[in-house]
Length: 324
Ligand SMILES: NC(=O)c1ccc[n+]([C@@H]2O[C@H](COP(=O)([O-])OP(=O)(O)OC[C@H]3O[C@@H](n4cnc5c(N)ncnc54)[C@H](O)[C@@H]3O)[C@@H](O)[C@H]2O)c1
Image (cartoon, rainbow, N blue to C red):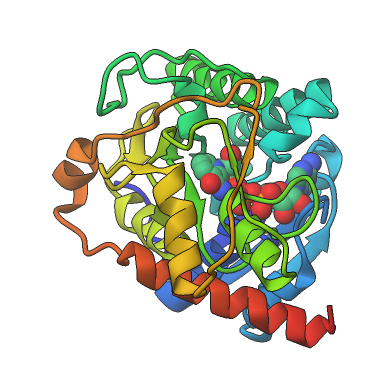
Protein backbone atom coordinates (compact mmCIF):
# COMPACT_ATOMS: atom_id res chain seq x y z
CA UNK A 1 0.00 0.00 0.00
CA UNK A 2 1.49 3.35 -1.10
CA UNK A 3 1.99 6.05 1.54
CA UNK A 4 -0.60 8.82 1.29
CA UNK A 5 0.40 12.35 0.28
CA UNK A 6 -1.40 13.63 3.37
CA UNK A 7 1.20 14.29 6.10
CA UNK A 8 4.10 13.24 3.83
CA UNK A 9 7.19 15.23 2.96
CA UNK A 10 7.06 15.76 -0.78
CA UNK A 11 9.76 17.00 -3.15
CA UNK A 12 8.84 18.54 -6.52
CA UNK A 13 11.79 18.77 -8.90
CA UNK A 14 11.20 21.49 -11.50
CA UNK A 15 8.58 22.83 -9.09
CA UNK A 16 8.98 26.46 -10.13
CA UNK A 17 8.00 25.55 -13.69
CA UNK A 18 4.62 25.44 -15.35
CA UNK A 19 3.16 22.08 -14.30
CA UNK A 20 5.38 21.66 -11.21
CA UNK A 21 4.18 24.90 -9.62
CA UNK A 22 0.52 23.87 -9.96
CA UNK A 23 1.45 20.49 -8.53
CA UNK A 24 3.10 22.19 -5.55
CA UNK A 25 -0.07 24.22 -4.87
CA UNK A 26 -2.17 21.09 -5.14
CA UNK A 27 0.08 19.07 -2.82
CA UNK A 28 -0.18 21.76 -0.15
CA UNK A 29 -3.98 21.88 -0.54
CA UNK A 30 -4.08 18.09 -0.26
CA UNK A 31 -2.36 18.20 3.16
CA UNK A 32 1.28 17.31 2.52
CA UNK A 33 3.31 17.90 5.67
CA UNK A 34 6.11 19.72 3.84
CA UNK A 35 6.52 20.59 0.16
CA UNK A 36 10.11 21.12 -0.96
CA UNK A 37 10.91 22.43 -4.43
CA UNK A 38 14.17 22.10 -6.33
CA UNK A 39 14.44 24.21 -9.47
CA UNK A 40 17.47 25.47 -11.36
CA UNK A 41 15.31 28.38 -12.64
CA UNK A 42 16.42 27.50 -16.18
CA UNK A 43 12.84 28.29 -17.21
CA UNK A 44 11.08 28.23 -13.84
CA UNK A 45 10.31 31.45 -11.99
CA UNK A 46 9.96 32.34 -8.34
CA UNK A 47 6.77 34.22 -9.29
CA UNK A 48 5.16 30.87 -10.19
CA UNK A 49 5.53 29.63 -6.63
CA UNK A 50 4.66 32.80 -4.75
CA UNK A 51 1.50 31.15 -3.43
CA UNK A 52 3.27 27.88 -2.57
CA UNK A 53 6.08 29.71 -0.73
CA UNK A 54 3.51 31.78 1.19
CA UNK A 55 1.87 28.50 2.15
CA UNK A 56 5.05 27.02 3.62
CA UNK A 57 6.86 25.43 0.66
CA UNK A 58 10.67 25.60 0.64
CA UNK A 59 12.64 26.40 -2.51
CA UNK A 60 16.17 25.26 -3.35
CA UNK A 61 17.58 26.94 -6.43
CA UNK A 62 19.77 24.04 -7.45
CA UNK A 63 20.54 21.64 -10.26
CA UNK A 64 19.02 18.19 -9.78
CA UNK A 65 21.62 16.83 -12.22
CA UNK A 66 23.99 17.22 -9.26
CA UNK A 67 23.64 13.90 -7.40
CA UNK A 68 25.20 15.17 -4.15
CA UNK A 69 22.94 18.23 -3.91
CA UNK A 70 19.87 16.16 -4.66
CA UNK A 71 20.76 13.45 -2.14
CA UNK A 72 21.50 16.05 0.54
CA UNK A 73 18.15 17.81 0.11
CA UNK A 74 16.21 14.53 0.11
CA UNK A 75 17.90 13.38 3.33
CA UNK A 76 17.81 16.77 5.00
CA UNK A 77 14.01 16.99 4.63
CA UNK A 78 13.29 13.27 5.19
CA UNK A 79 11.49 13.21 1.84
CA UNK A 80 8.92 10.43 1.39
CA UNK A 81 7.60 11.15 -2.11
CA UNK A 82 9.16 12.78 -5.19
CA UNK A 83 7.42 14.22 -8.25
CA UNK A 84 9.90 14.76 -11.08
CA UNK A 85 8.87 17.62 -13.38
CA UNK A 86 12.39 18.79 -14.34
CA UNK A 87 12.99 19.26 -18.02
CA UNK A 88 14.39 21.66 -20.60
CA UNK A 89 11.80 22.79 -23.17
CA UNK A 90 11.27 20.83 -26.38
CA UNK A 91 12.20 23.94 -28.38
CA UNK A 92 15.58 23.93 -26.64
CA UNK A 93 16.24 20.70 -28.58
CA UNK A 94 16.82 22.88 -31.65
CA UNK A 95 19.53 24.92 -29.88
CA UNK A 96 21.18 22.43 -27.57
CA UNK A 97 19.95 18.93 -28.37
CA UNK A 98 22.43 16.98 -26.23
CA UNK A 99 21.78 19.01 -23.08
CA UNK A 100 18.01 18.73 -23.56
CA UNK A 101 18.35 14.96 -23.89
CA UNK A 102 20.71 14.67 -20.93
CA UNK A 103 18.62 16.73 -18.48
CA UNK A 104 15.66 14.45 -19.08
CA UNK A 105 17.84 11.40 -18.41
CA UNK A 106 20.24 12.58 -15.70
CA UNK A 107 17.71 13.99 -13.22
CA UNK A 108 15.76 10.75 -13.31
CA UNK A 109 18.93 8.66 -13.09
CA UNK A 110 19.92 10.58 -9.93
CA UNK A 111 16.48 10.07 -8.43
CA UNK A 112 16.45 6.34 -9.16
CA UNK A 113 19.87 6.01 -7.55
CA UNK A 114 18.66 7.87 -4.43
CA UNK A 115 15.60 5.65 -4.33
CA UNK A 116 17.70 2.50 -4.75
CA UNK A 117 19.69 3.68 -1.70
CA UNK A 118 16.34 3.97 0.15
CA UNK A 119 16.56 7.74 0.58
CA UNK A 120 12.83 8.08 -0.21
CA UNK A 121 9.87 5.80 -0.87
CA UNK A 122 7.81 6.72 -3.92
CA UNK A 123 8.63 8.37 -7.24
CA UNK A 124 6.06 9.81 -9.63
CA UNK A 125 7.95 10.61 -12.81
CA UNK A 126 6.33 13.03 -15.23
CA UNK A 127 7.00 11.83 -18.77
CA UNK A 128 5.41 13.20 -21.94
CA UNK A 129 3.22 12.09 -24.81
CA UNK A 130 6.12 13.31 -26.96
CA UNK A 131 7.84 10.01 -26.12
CA UNK A 132 5.27 8.23 -28.37
CA UNK A 133 6.18 10.30 -31.45
CA UNK A 134 3.56 10.62 -34.24
CA UNK A 135 0.59 8.37 -33.61
CA UNK A 136 0.90 4.89 -35.16
CA UNK A 137 -2.73 4.34 -34.14
CA UNK A 138 -5.27 6.50 -32.36
CA UNK A 139 -6.15 7.16 -29.71
CA UNK A 140 -2.75 6.26 -28.28
CA UNK A 141 -2.82 4.00 -25.25
CA UNK A 142 -0.02 3.35 -22.77
CA UNK A 143 1.18 0.39 -24.89
CA UNK A 144 1.87 2.65 -27.90
CA UNK A 145 5.51 2.22 -29.01
CA UNK A 146 7.95 4.85 -27.82
CA UNK A 147 9.16 6.35 -31.11
CA UNK A 148 10.56 9.81 -30.30
CA UNK A 149 11.23 12.40 -33.01
CA UNK A 150 13.31 14.97 -31.09
CA UNK A 151 16.23 14.73 -28.65
CA UNK A 152 13.82 16.07 -26.00
CA UNK A 153 11.45 13.18 -26.62
CA UNK A 154 14.33 10.70 -26.88
CA UNK A 155 15.37 11.80 -23.38
CA UNK A 156 11.81 11.32 -22.11
CA UNK A 157 11.60 7.85 -23.69
CA UNK A 158 15.03 6.83 -22.39
CA UNK A 159 14.09 8.00 -18.89
CA UNK A 160 10.85 6.00 -18.99
CA UNK A 161 12.73 2.84 -19.98
CA UNK A 162 15.33 3.45 -17.27
CA UNK A 163 12.59 3.76 -14.65
CA UNK A 164 11.00 0.49 -15.77
CA UNK A 165 14.31 -1.38 -15.54
CA UNK A 166 15.05 -0.01 -12.04
CA UNK A 167 11.60 -1.13 -10.89
CA UNK A 168 12.21 -4.60 -12.39
CA UNK A 169 15.63 -5.04 -10.89
CA UNK A 170 15.39 -3.22 -7.55
CA UNK A 171 11.69 -3.43 -6.71
CA UNK A 172 11.30 0.36 -6.43
CA UNK A 173 7.95 2.10 -5.99
CA UNK A 174 8.22 4.31 -9.08
CA UNK A 175 5.66 4.99 -11.81
CA UNK A 176 5.08 7.29 -14.76
CA UNK A 177 2.37 9.78 -15.64
CA UNK A 178 2.36 10.86 -19.26
CA UNK A 179 0.58 14.18 -19.83
CA UNK A 180 -0.44 15.31 -23.28
CA UNK A 181 -0.10 19.00 -24.26
CA UNK A 182 -0.79 21.26 -21.32
CA UNK A 183 -1.89 24.86 -21.38
CA UNK A 184 -2.86 27.40 -18.75
CA UNK A 185 -1.49 30.07 -16.43
CA UNK A 186 2.28 30.10 -15.70
CA UNK A 187 3.27 28.68 -19.09
CA UNK A 188 6.21 30.63 -20.47
CA UNK A 189 4.86 33.17 -22.99
CA UNK A 190 7.93 35.03 -24.27
CA UNK A 191 10.97 34.11 -26.34
CA UNK A 192 11.87 31.04 -28.37
CA UNK A 193 10.92 28.57 -25.56
CA UNK A 194 7.30 29.73 -25.33
CA UNK A 195 4.39 27.34 -25.85
CA UNK A 196 2.06 28.03 -28.80
CA UNK A 197 -0.97 29.10 -26.72
CA UNK A 198 0.69 31.71 -24.46
CA UNK A 199 2.90 32.83 -27.37
CA UNK A 200 -0.18 33.54 -29.49
CA UNK A 201 -1.89 35.37 -26.61
CA UNK A 202 1.22 37.48 -26.09
CA UNK A 203 1.53 38.28 -29.81
CA UNK A 204 -2.06 39.56 -29.91
CA UNK A 205 -1.49 41.65 -26.78
CA UNK A 206 1.65 43.07 -28.44
CA UNK A 207 -0.36 43.93 -31.59
CA UNK A 208 1.56 41.32 -33.59
CA UNK A 209 -0.02 38.79 -35.94
CA UNK A 210 -0.57 35.27 -34.61
CA UNK A 211 1.15 32.50 -36.60
CA UNK A 212 0.28 29.02 -37.79
CA UNK A 213 3.13 26.70 -38.80
CA UNK A 214 2.20 24.39 -41.67
CA UNK A 215 -1.45 23.89 -42.67
CA UNK A 216 -2.78 24.08 -39.10
CA UNK A 217 -4.26 20.59 -39.37
CA UNK A 218 -1.80 19.17 -36.83
CA UNK A 219 -3.83 18.02 -33.85
CA UNK A 220 -3.10 17.95 -30.14
CA UNK A 221 -4.86 16.71 -27.04
CA UNK A 222 -4.88 19.84 -24.83
CA UNK A 223 -5.18 19.44 -21.06
CA UNK A 224 -5.70 22.38 -18.72
CA UNK A 225 -2.75 22.48 -16.32
CA UNK A 226 -4.78 22.53 -13.10
CA UNK A 227 -6.60 19.41 -14.35
CA UNK A 228 -3.22 17.72 -14.87
CA UNK A 229 -2.13 18.55 -11.30
CA UNK A 230 -5.42 17.21 -9.96
CA UNK A 231 -5.17 14.03 -12.05
CA UNK A 232 -1.59 13.44 -10.93
CA UNK A 233 -2.72 13.39 -7.31
CA UNK A 234 -5.87 11.39 -8.05
CA UNK A 235 -3.99 8.58 -9.83
CA UNK A 236 -1.13 8.64 -7.30
CA UNK A 237 -2.48 5.81 -5.09
CA UNK A 238 -3.42 3.56 -8.00
CA UNK A 239 -0.69 3.34 -10.65
CA UNK A 240 1.35 0.15 -10.16
CA UNK A 241 5.15 0.38 -9.97
CA UNK A 242 6.76 0.44 -13.42
CA UNK A 243 3.48 1.35 -15.11
CA UNK A 244 2.44 4.53 -16.90
CA UNK A 245 -0.83 6.34 -17.37
CA UNK A 246 -1.82 8.97 -19.92
CA UNK A 247 -3.12 12.28 -18.61
CA UNK A 248 -5.24 13.19 -21.58
CA UNK A 249 -8.73 14.22 -22.66
CA UNK A 250 -9.24 11.97 -25.71
CA UNK A 251 -10.19 15.10 -27.59
CA UNK A 252 -8.34 16.30 -30.67
CA UNK A 253 -8.00 19.97 -31.38
CA UNK A 254 -6.32 21.21 -34.56
CA UNK A 255 -3.77 24.00 -34.19
CA UNK A 256 -5.99 26.07 -36.48
CA UNK A 257 -8.91 25.61 -34.04
CA UNK A 258 -6.67 26.49 -31.10
CA UNK A 259 -5.43 29.72 -32.72
CA UNK A 260 -8.94 30.68 -33.83
CA UNK A 261 -10.28 30.05 -30.31
CA UNK A 262 -7.67 32.39 -28.85
CA UNK A 263 -8.48 34.99 -31.53
CA UNK A 264 -12.20 34.71 -30.68
CA UNK A 265 -11.70 34.93 -26.92
CA UNK A 266 -9.44 37.98 -27.42
CA UNK A 267 -11.70 39.48 -30.08
CA UNK A 268 -8.80 39.65 -32.57
CA UNK A 269 -9.96 40.75 -36.03
CA UNK A 270 -6.64 40.80 -37.92
CA UNK A 271 -4.82 38.32 -40.18
CA UNK A 272 -3.14 35.06 -39.15
CA UNK A 273 0.36 34.56 -40.60
CA UNK A 274 1.09 31.26 -42.38
CA UNK A 275 4.59 29.98 -41.62
CA UNK A 276 6.52 26.94 -42.95
CA UNK A 277 5.98 23.65 -41.14
CA UNK A 278 8.39 23.13 -38.23
CA UNK A 279 10.92 20.31 -38.32
CA UNK A 280 9.86 17.25 -36.32
CA UNK A 281 6.38 18.65 -35.67
CA UNK A 282 4.28 15.52 -35.01
CA UNK A 283 1.03 15.50 -37.00
CA UNK A 284 -1.27 14.08 -34.40
CA UNK A 285 -1.41 13.45 -30.67
CA UNK A 286 -4.56 11.98 -29.22
CA UNK A 287 -4.33 9.90 -26.08
CA UNK A 288 -6.90 7.46 -24.81
CA UNK A 289 -8.33 8.12 -21.34
CA UNK A 290 -9.35 4.48 -20.88
CA UNK A 291 -6.74 3.61 -18.26
CA UNK A 292 -7.17 6.96 -16.48
CA UNK A 293 -10.91 6.32 -16.23
CA UNK A 294 -10.36 2.74 -15.07
CA UNK A 295 -8.11 4.02 -12.27
CA UNK A 296 -10.14 7.03 -11.08
CA UNK A 297 -13.44 7.14 -12.97
CA UNK A 298 -14.74 9.99 -15.14
CA UNK A 299 -13.49 13.49 -14.46
CA UNK A 300 -14.81 16.91 -15.36
CA UNK A 301 -12.28 18.65 -17.52
CA UNK A 302 -12.05 22.42 -17.70
CA UNK A 303 -13.80 23.54 -20.94
CA UNK A 304 -11.19 24.66 -23.51
CA UNK A 305 -12.50 28.21 -23.91
CA UNK A 306 -12.64 28.68 -20.13
CA UNK A 307 -9.03 27.51 -19.88
CA UNK A 308 -8.03 29.91 -22.67
CA UNK A 309 -9.82 32.79 -20.94
CA UNK A 310 -7.99 32.00 -17.66
CA UNK A 311 -4.69 31.94 -19.56
CA UNK A 312 -5.39 35.26 -21.30
CA UNK A 313 -6.25 36.82 -17.90
CA UNK A 314 -3.01 35.49 -16.43
CA UNK A 315 -0.77 36.72 -19.29
CA UNK A 316 -2.42 40.17 -19.06
CA UNK A 317 -1.93 40.28 -15.27
CA UNK A 318 1.76 39.34 -15.50
CA UNK A 319 2.42 41.91 -18.23
CA UNK A 320 0.67 44.60 -16.21
CA UNK A 321 2.61 43.68 -13.06
CA UNK A 322 5.94 43.63 -14.93
CA UNK A 323 5.05 46.78 -16.86
CA UNK A 324 5.83 45.08 -20.22
N1 LIG B 1 3.91 21.48 -20.74
C1 LIG B 1 3.44 20.46 -21.41
O1 LIG B 1 2.62 20.62 -22.31
C2 LIG B 1 3.87 19.06 -21.07
C3 LIG B 1 3.25 18.00 -21.74
C4 LIG B 1 3.63 16.71 -21.44
C5 LIG B 1 4.59 16.48 -20.49
N2 LIG B 1 5.17 17.52 -19.85
C6 LIG B 1 6.18 17.19 -18.84
O2 LIG B 1 5.83 17.81 -17.63
C7 LIG B 1 7.00 18.14 -16.89
C8 LIG B 1 7.00 19.61 -16.54
O3 LIG B 1 6.95 20.35 -17.76
P1 LIG B 1 6.61 21.90 -17.81
O4 LIG B 1 5.81 22.15 -19.00
O5 LIG B 1 6.12 22.32 -16.49
O6 LIG B 1 8.05 22.50 -18.09
P2 LIG B 1 8.79 23.77 -17.45
O7 LIG B 1 9.96 24.03 -18.33
O8 LIG B 1 7.85 24.87 -17.18
O9 LIG B 1 9.28 23.18 -16.06
C9 LIG B 1 10.43 22.41 -15.93
C10 LIG B 1 11.21 22.99 -14.78
O10 LIG B 1 12.40 22.22 -14.60
C11 LIG B 1 13.44 23.14 -14.23
N3 LIG B 1 14.71 22.48 -14.51
C12 LIG B 1 15.28 22.22 -15.70
N4 LIG B 1 16.44 21.57 -15.54
C13 LIG B 1 16.61 21.41 -14.20
C14 LIG B 1 17.61 20.81 -13.41
N5 LIG B 1 18.67 20.22 -13.97
N6 LIG B 1 17.47 20.83 -12.06
C15 LIG B 1 16.39 21.43 -11.48
N7 LIG B 1 15.40 22.02 -12.19
C16 LIG B 1 15.51 22.00 -13.54
C17 LIG B 1 13.17 24.37 -15.08
O11 LIG B 1 13.74 25.54 -14.56
C18 LIG B 1 11.65 24.44 -15.03
O12 LIG B 1 11.18 25.25 -13.98
C19 LIG B 1 8.18 17.73 -17.79
O13 LIG B 1 8.60 16.45 -17.43
C20 LIG B 1 7.57 17.69 -19.16
O14 LIG B 1 8.24 16.78 -20.00
C21 LIG B 1 4.85 18.81 -20.13
